[in-house]
Structure formats: structure tokens, C-alpha cells
Image (cartoon, rainbow, N blue to C red; front, side):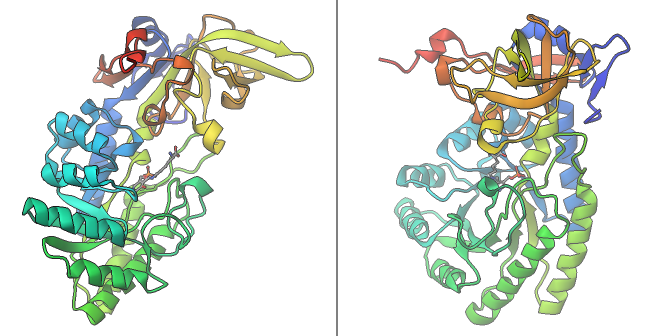
Length: 430
Ligand code: LLP
């Protein structure tokens, strides 16, 4: 199977985190997001341990909460000793509402508004990751107005192409994020930051992309980041204490995808960084990483009930389900691959396009998937590896309510986000 938390019984029943998927569909109704809490926690521990072993006590993984954010997720992150990366007042509010400690929140984003800055500074958010000079000056002004000090990192772009899909490539000079090192702009950005009263510059951040499988992407960006740290030390007399290398490790959506050995990659990265620091005469900085997808993707599964099976002779077969692009827009946006399984039996002998219920032809969850030839209305199908960027990117298009998020933990299940009801859909309408 794709992941060790997905199994099938001899009678064909699909299990996720040891629990019967058809039984969960029956209990909670569909469409349904399932999340394997034990897997989320194991992934957090894997990162914490790998970073601590490789870089020492100051290293910390920050969960990139854009991948999947709701209160219970932030509670789990707090219990697992993670930091969190947030990108909006909404994410910060959710984290704080869950009791997540403000000082362990890092605040990202290229378009922070005055209201975001005022709110985050006022709430005592631990660290701003400042994207650009305009934001830097706005933040400095707000910090002086509130009479507080604010720790910051600067987002810089190392000019690396991570060879992933274009919409999630963030490391090259022409992207909208951060300030480029290679044009000299980042050095001026750091000079300006150091001159701001009330702002405490701790170091630098980069994130080169998502779904990274190539072996050397993090080493290549670390090389440039460390070179920039040496340049700041020489020209500005500033020695960065923190190096945040962002997120991005890829995960397996299909059996044919590679498995990234994250602890091994982190160990190799640490060896490289230590060697470069020694060569450049830099003290080893506290290393932060921001994994999102690799914390939650394989902890997720989406369960649907089949509404219609449509055979278009000599052309195509459709399985149409009770969800679609509203709960998973990733094929529509990125042509993202997924593994689809019948939840009650194996025997995948015919190819189908798994389509959603929205009124547009483009509402496809996954084309060309093998399913049993006699699949029919009322049966249950599961889409695997949907823990990242599914619930987080869901919408109410066609006034469809979002599915609930049901957590699976130690053989038990509970609702972490309840189903959106018809009255919720009208809640904001006057
Ligand atoms: N840090 C920063 C600054 C980021 O922008 C991101 C993701 C991450 C960390 C986490 O990256 P991860 O470990 O999850 O790859 N909606 C797209 C993904 C967009 C990723 C945006 N930034 C998708 O569904 O594939």
C-alpha cells in the first residue's frame, strides 16, 4: 500500500489508521476528511528528533500551518513542542484560540496589511518573517507605536530552482516573495533592518519550493544563505543567529513516487552546513525548517460516496462522487496526482475519471484511475494522501458545505471540525 497506515482486509475492507473506512463513512457520513492523529504526531517527532540530533537543541521545526489549520491541529502542535508558521491574522487567531503560545508563532506573508501587523504585534507573536522593505518600515512604525520590541527574520531569495511545479516554486529571483541575494538588494534590506529601533534582527529565511525531491536543493540554498551570512558579517558587522530554510520535502501521492528519507536528508544537510560554517568562520546558527505537507499529507484520507457511474461508449467512464473540487481543488489547480481506492473491495480492473458534483466539466479529482468495473451508486471510495492543502484550500463553490474533519487516534475517532451545514452557508448573509 501507499503508506503504512493504509491496509486492506482479506474481505476487501479498506482500513485507515487501523479503522474500517466504510464503517467511518457510515458513522460520520460523506464526504469526509479523515486524519490520522498518530501519524501527524509521529511526523512531528521525526522532525524534532532529526533536527535536534543533527543541529542541537536550538533547532526547531515550525509546522507550516497553511497546509491544514484548525484549532485541534494547533493543540497537537503545541503538545508536540513544534513552532508554527502562519501567514494571516486568521491563522494566528486560530492558533491563539487553541491556546497555542504566541511566542512560538512565526508570521509569514508577502502582503501583510496594517491590520495584520497591528494584530500580530499586539498579540506578542514571537517572530515576524519580513518579506520586503515596505513591510519592514510599516512594522517598525507599529512596534514603536506600541512601545514593544519585535524579533524578525528577513525573507531572502537564494535564486535556486527546486524543479517542482511552477505555482509552488518560490526560490528564484523573479518570484513575488522576499528580496534577492544575487542582485545585492538583500544586503541593503538587512542594512535597513538593522537601523530600525525596536526591531531585533535574528537572521534570515528562505523557502525555495514545495514537493521537493531533488537531493541537493537544501544544500544548494544553504550554501547561498551561508555565503550571504558571511557577507553580512563582513560588510554590516552583523552575525545572524538564526537560519530558517523553509519547508518543501515531497511526499508520496502514488506508489511510483519516491520516498524521501527526511532524517537522512537532514543529517546530510547538517554535515554540509557545519562544514561550510567552519570554512566561512561562522558560528553554527539555530536552524529552523517549516514542513507543512510532510507533516500532514500522509495523515489524510478523503472518503466519498458514489452518486453516479457513467459510461460514455468508446470514450470515457466517470465515477461521480458527493464531493469534488470544493474539498480538493489540487488536480484542477496543479494537475496533482492522487491514489484512489474502492473502500469496500479491491479488484481494480477498469479506468475511470473520478469527478465531483460541481456544475463544471473541470471538476475532476483525478482522471484515469483503476476501480472495480462494477462500481455503483452508494459505494464508498477513498482518495489517499489528502491531509495537506485539501481542507485548507476547500471552498463553498455551488454552496456546498465543507466536509467534517474526523481525527483517528489509538483506535478511536472524534470530530475536530464539524460538517458545514446549510445554515452555516447563510451565516454571513444579511
Ligand atoms: N514555508 C513557506 C514560506 C511556504 O511558503 C511553504 C509553502 C511552506 C513553508 C511549506 O511547504 P511544504 O513543506 O508544505 O511543501 N497549495 C500548494 C502548496 C503551496 C505551498 C506554499 N508554501 C499545493 O497544494 O501543493
